[in-house]
Image 1: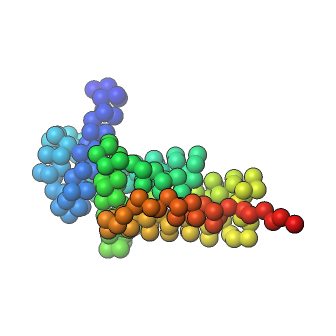
Image 2: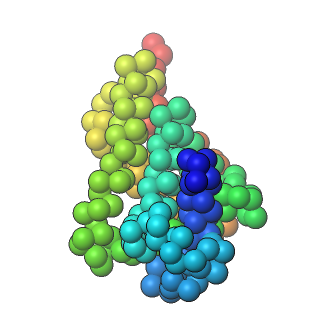
Length: 193
């Protein structure tokens, strides 16, 4: 098999598994359901992934990598804006992303081994956020009266709050001004004399 074919098969598994985990949760995503969702046998699935947890972590890591790319170019608030603007039914369903994110949160609370594995995979997002903020500060566009670590934690907390808001099914069509406020909060304000 060519590398392109292997990559396409891996993507097929991830896409099917994402919808399966979103629909059934981690525990409910049985091997049989994963087979149905991906259209592949367990042998094909586990040729690419050691076990169900490795598959789930690969999904979560895939999300982190995509978010990290957006953060590096446009910032963490853009990740939030993208989450709000992704139409349901598109290939990147917010509902599926949210379900994966919520399952990660649940497992972080209940599974210390998973927490350790997740910490390694999620660190690039925090690093990208911190580096973007440092670049903005060096350019004179970020407030300098608050530590970068605090600003990073603030933005990550807002993201988690947005995820919770959306997961509860609360309206999201009026949240753009809230994200404008978040951006304004971290921006440097020049004093006029």
